[in-house]
Amino acid sequence: MGGLGAPELIIILLVVLLLFGSTKLPKLAKSLGEASKEFKKGIADEDEPRAVTATAAPAPAPAEEKVTMTKAELDALLAEREAQARKNAPPSV
Image (cartoon, rainbow, N blue to C red; front, side, top):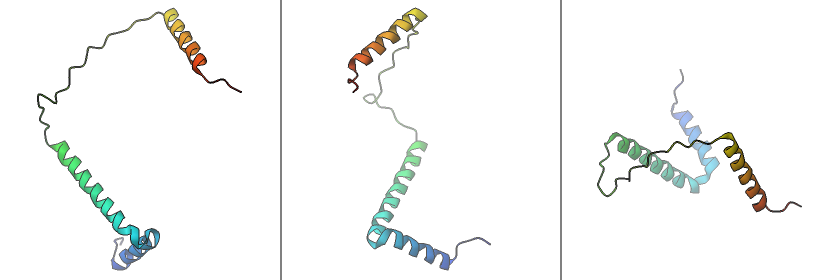
């Protein structure tokens, strides 16, 4: 039970033809094929180890600095930002 036979596939193809029209079906099939190729290419690229070249190596990231701030300094910074935002906001009518 359950399986798609020839009559079911023909009905599905006819419905797709009616929905998309005969002019868009080749474009739809082409885009599906290209998407499938890109997906398979991405899967294959992920499986292969990546070679790192000297020119493509990214610069090392700087060490993150821990920032400490008192509650008063934080409140002052937030108040300054809110004042700046109000100053830059367009006037409301």
